Image (cartoon, rainbow, N blue to C red; front, side, top):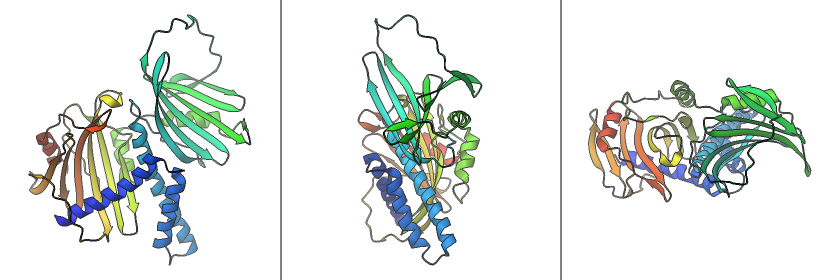
Length: 362
């Protein structure tokens, strides 16, 4: 039991450091995490051959970059009212820079915007997702709009629009009431010129901005971890898998190595602030050399039976609930929460429903 608590403390500390760095925006995200991964690669491959060391460094950079991006998306998500959809395809050479969520209050419209930024040398690529939250009467708006002369292109079977003006390529389309766009250009001093990114590649990016099927989301997460991801056969009524956030992650630190699969479920419509969230996290600790003399604070757990194993249930003062247990060498946790203007809050989901879900995870 004490070891399980210590593992939780270690992982929570690591996650908090990584996510806090992203959330506070200390400089360039890629730079921060590349520096961390380089230090780790140097530590783990000091005796490796040069070609092996390069491969290890590349792998470490990729793993840390994925952690950075997931953390940045979660931070951006907390600032917008819709569910951010991550692109599944980015052209070779482009590296993730940032993702931001912003609210704008205008004279006629209130809008929420999520913006992904990627860079390839001097070339810039941005993907924006916009939703109109509130519209006010505008008596000055013209009754007729000018004819749209942009080129018509097909994105996932729908007619959408592409244009290029002053070297800037622009592709726009819609998914339900979400308006999306891709912009591409090259920076040459103070000027913006045409990038090498083709219209076809931009369309390919656009077609990848969609929700994955649950099967594909699990398969992609499974490819990132060495253990078999367990899934529940029972999910509380009204919840569905949030495939955009479901993921598998590896973490390699100086004293801790772990793998984690996270399956997210959501209840509600497309507006983020109205949703309730349910998460299943599966953690495999491969190495833990952290100090074992840490005394965990006394926690008011409620103990429940999960298929013959002792589970621990906790509800915080703000109503956020957590249920933890073990299956073999996996540490599993089900958590449920929602959001309000001040941050996390609880949901009506009962402990009994969470226990029922936990017992179905096999």
